[in-house]
Image (tube, rainbow, N blue to C red; front, side):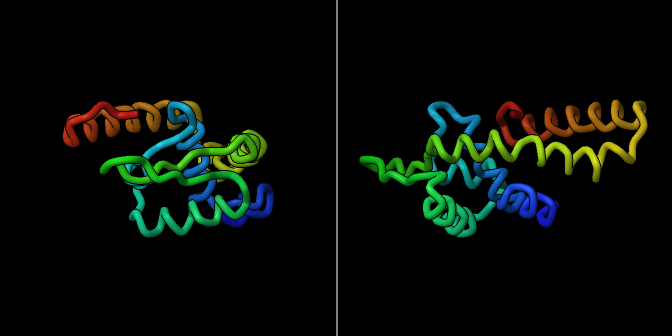
Length: 129
């Protein structure tokens, strides 16, 4: 998936995921700690990726006042990158995952995903995204 996404869009799967998470956040920004949590990443790994996204002009970081930490924010160019990369990403996912499933298997996978998300939300004490 990484190889195809890098060839098509110039980003890794993880970079695309971080850009997507920011694009879906209110005002296209999240605290770095929350972004790391949502991306299932260490803060260190996320920091390296956000540094790269900053160099590309796709994200910025801003220190907040008090003990709130650092905010990562998607720039307009970063949002455009997500929009441009999305069709290629969906094509890769479709080819690698869904093309190998029939309609019944796809429905079963969707049901399983919803069940797992609900369970994780309960176990972790929050609603699943």
